[in-house]
Length: 469
Ligand code: UDP
Image (cartoon, rainbow, N blue to C red; front, side, top):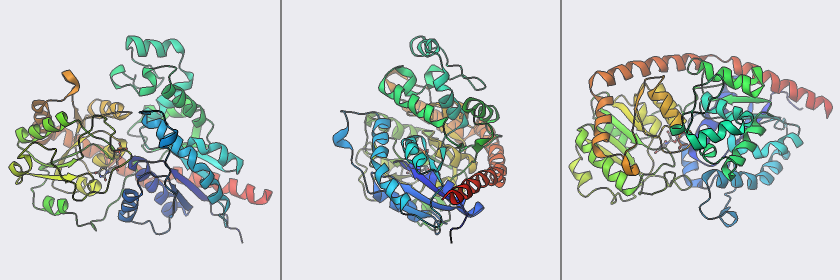
């Protein structure tokens, strides 16, 4: 017999920052509303993905299908933008996706939930009579800017790109040129056109899910509803972050066990972020100058700020010879260096962690907030700059790195920012503020109104589909 319990197919694009929130969304649909969930994972680095999925709790009933690794390198121009490479990979995954969905019965997936890069799968979903949802694993502010993009007039875009005027988006904080997104830098260019196409596809969706909550971004959430003309089908579903159980016995956690409460600053630039060699040296000397305890996730230096996006290897014994000579030895009593990949959710949840130097990826931001940890906002690329603006401005839970001549943040600034968060009254005020935001996030998570509504829509759709068959 065919059941009417809805079956949602989720499609995660490459990158841990895309996969992690999709896993959490799947878990929520499954455990709080009895959806069947199949999660399709598109990856170029299956070892880290497998490791992550292995560490994540409550996956039991989530049907996870890893799309066979896709190599698009032969189809790309030299030095392609990150977005181009991800989008092409997603396109290549569609035949596999389609045949997998068609092979599923009792019940077949009746809705498809994708992230920004999975929009290319919408025509296939419609062809299979599925409902379509977009999941923004980002802020409502970024979502609102994206949805408004097709309606921006040419003149406004030009004065933003050429005269560095702020970009005005109704109902939202203006987007300063300093924090702008890559597509807005070159109106008419490839990245611009790709983003425009994505924005147009989003408004055709049956619903939009955003990993935020109403009280965090009331104005921007309202703006998404208005710009998307989707009204009530905009669901702020957050804050969804990885829930952790201390089942992992990573050495860094044992080290943290031996440190005083809220005494350690944690530094990480996300799943793909990398620093130049010179910048790494300045960070290392800055940490020494700050005289604070630290945990630092290090990757081999790279001039490209997203240098590890596609090949973040699982941790282990990668030599850290690229750090300044003697640094590890000099700091052995106060610091812990983790090569490549750290158990971030566990570190941020550890009582010894008192601050976070972050690249402001949205998952990192939410994980920090939900653990009550104030931040040093050090954005590298994409919407991270907008996130940094929000954290250090209206929310008051972070201090932000100021750009310096030559693009390298010097050790004195690193030390000063770390000290501002970890010691003194400013740090105390941010800590208090972030704990208030945490409480509001936890409250939002306990409400399930959106799940009921979305589930109802999916059930109705499925019933209609079953009767039509
Ligand atoms: N992460 C981790 N260990 C690391 C680096 C990253 O567990 O060493 C996780 C982090 O907890 C977060 C995700 O990877 O959940 C990164 O997502 P985010 O949105 O912060 O940044 P992105 O990687 O997308 O730039």
